[in-house]
Image 1 (cartoon, one colour):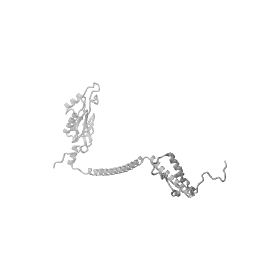
Image 2 (cartoon, rainbow, N blue to C red; image 1 turned 135 degrees about the vertical axis):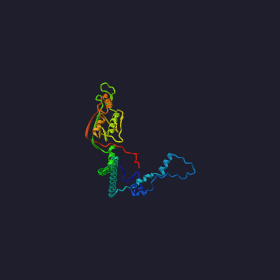
Image 3 (cartoon, helix red, strand yellow; image 1 turned 90 degrees about the horizontal axis):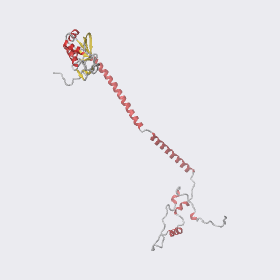
Image 4 (cartoon, rainbow, N blue to C red; image 1 turned 60 degrees about the vertical axis):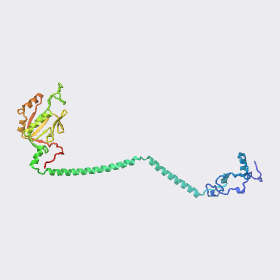
Length: 319
């Protein structure tokens, strides 16, 4: 389809509508727009006294007659201007820096999320534990040093010469270890007795060594002049008892089992005679009926350790 050169365009652009400005939203010409918003419809004049009826067809005719161009179309009349190279590179650099900042912030955030929050707590507790361990070791060394000093002072004090009266009292009370001649009296339960005191063959209860038997023998030795006595290595002192707890005999708080070994320091001949069969016939007869046979042996040298003594709380010296 050809057109005559003298023929005008179908819709010629009027000079007032020729675009002479750049796009407003992205340029400084935004302030030059006549209107930034759609203007409200103008009210028709000359009809103020008559009732105005809203009609879509009449509104369309009115818009075509009075407002042939939409107000928003004004922005399209602005001409675009190509951005300069400086602005392009400035925009690129700015976007690049923003991307780097966002990437670094994201990396830090991800690292914080992947880090175990209890790690710092464990590290703190481990540091506190190490400090407390160092303090404990330091205090332990100090205690050991003080203990060494106490032992040294105790040895110095033990070397002092005590009065004879004090030494005699302590030996009688069993506080000091002693050595001297004496006897050893060994008494045991019958060979056929089991641990519960019954006969292994018949199962009947039989006679065994009791705490009363040990008390009787110890009393005989004290009466004969024994200066120190021990039973199975347990020294008898002023606070030492011989008693039965269930089926067990206790020397103080230490349990002892058959055979019972009674060691006594004193005149060995006198002590041996005091607990011999010739002197204590009724006692030995009762032992023989139960199958118990005490054995007495003399010794030139016996060593008895000190007795375990409790702390005196209520007793005080009389002034």
